[in-house]
Amino acid sequence: MKLLIAEDDLHIRQGLETLLESEGYECIAAADGDQAWQLYLQHEPDLVLLDIMMPKQDGYAVCRRIRQHNEQLPVIFITAKSEEVDQVLGLELGADDYIKKPFGSREVIARIRAVARRALRPVAGTTGNDSFVMDDLQIRPSELRALRADQVIELSLRDLKILRLLFEQRGKVVDRDALFNHCWGRDYFANSRTLDQHISKLRKAVERNAKEPRIISTVHGIGYRFDN
Figure (cartoon, rainbow, N blue to C red):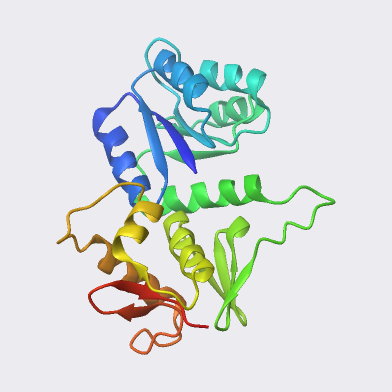
């Protein structure tokens, strides 16, 4: 999922890029409204984060232009302005949600996931049956979550990529390079612990017992495998 981040504050913009890329999103970033509009036309993002107070064009103006071009694209405003009139104006322009400064990383991820779920929700009259099962876990990509009995597990896009790849290659070893290239989209140094740390975190979320995994098995020195 490709995100356009339009934010004139360098530290906030870079912080959002780092946070969202760590969650598996592909990010493109703009420092002002004109650049945001040009990057939108060039890259056709799947979701847009728009700061309201930006140079050249403010977020409202960019949102208007986006809505004239695409009525369905999810748009989330980032703003330090909390007055009700500003929120009403943003919603009237077609914003799907607000993130108010200052914000925490968990809030940002939660709001993006919620808006993305609504955008990914199957159109009425279609089955939308893209779910798959690993052990006793039902994984629902269009909802960005997995289910085990009454337990709901929130997943990032990168989590889904890892699980989908292991599921599609079930019974086979998926080596580290294949996982990096498919799930990160770029090569890492051989001594990187990024993959192992992410797998460890994912296991804690999806396994009944992370010390005796049934979904993500380690093949030492090579990679990982799903056996069922």
